[in-house]
Length: 147
Image (cartoon, rainbow, N blue to C red; front, side, top):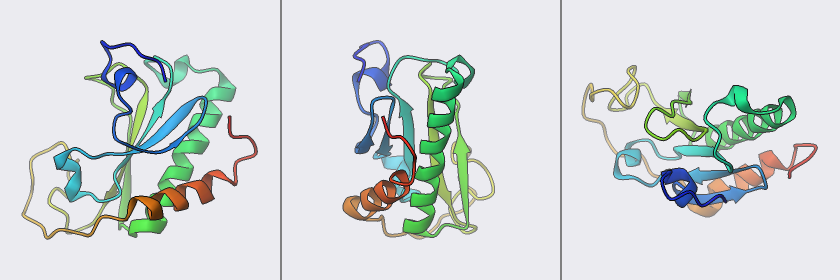
């Protein structure tokens, strides 16, 4: 992983590491706000790249495959009603995607999780690290090439 201390995602994994390849990594988001969305993950490109269009076509394809594998693993593990995929990078100019499980009765639905809460919601159990990691590894094993 690159170590540019000015960039939070270069200096730190960005969460609880689930999988790491040569080009990107998948982390489980561990900040307190993520607790309302159990299984919330991030796919983080290893090098300091600001936009997806900065990637070569092969690297962009690989990133998308890892992102889709992560979505499938989260869907399989926590069975949400919906998955939100977001690539913002407004605070950290480091390419990464949020994979956010959503439920019709979660605290923010149908608004984005960064908006104000719409209601209070009960807590959903978070998947065990090992269970989420195994689901991710199963999905990633289907890729033709994992750098």
